[in-house]
Image (cartoon, rainbow, N blue to C red):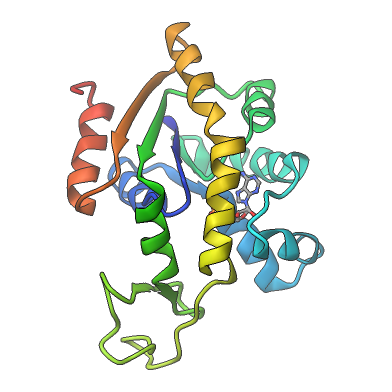
Amino acid sequence: MRMVLLGAPGSGKGTQAKLICERYGIAHISTGDMLRAAVQAGTELGRRVKAIMDAGELVPDAVVLALIEERIAQPDCAKGFLLDGFPRTLAQAEGLEALGIDLDYVIEIDVPDEEVVKRLSGRRVHPGSGRVYHLLYHPPKEDCKDDITGEPLIQRDDDREETVRKRLEVYRQQTAPLIDFYRRRAQQGKVRFATLSGVGRVEAVQAEIRQILAGKA
Ligand code: AMP
């Protein structure tokens, strides 16, 4: 199974993606995670993209397309994969098609902007493990400390409120047109496309996605 999860930053894509990939045994490909890993490792790519990411802008299409092409060629993708945070522009979607990569499903998770701002600006992470907390919805046991190690939690630069608003604007302008793009592909019988609301419990959203994947929605 090859699928794309579309949705604004903070729509819960990453959380849902992990659950889907565990359930179906497919590879989870997050361009955001790959780029953050490059920044943390201080590679040449990381140095090139850090300022762009911190500003909430998009990394150039050619850069992410090259990452995706290389990643998809790896053996763990043979059984299928889920693309999380890619494609984010029409040029990336067209680039994916030009690589000859067909998709089975595109699922859009829809969440209102104000909910996204609440979710992301309260998010804190433990840099060492990637564990994610939320000041309101999933607070750590001790203020601003990781539950397991007691180490300090941080706010990702791109989760600051002004950056979140910028990322939402970028999403509406550059990524939302993909919804129509994939709707058209669905009309041509090339992919199955569905939209669902991402407001509500993680489990409820997951159940709805599974219904779609089972062809019952
Ligand atoms: P994410 O964790 O998916 O929200 O991605 C974090 C940041 O990485 C984004 O705000 C962009 O700066 C960059 N990024 C991730 N995926 C892409 C992509 N497909 N195209 C361009 N930039 C991306």
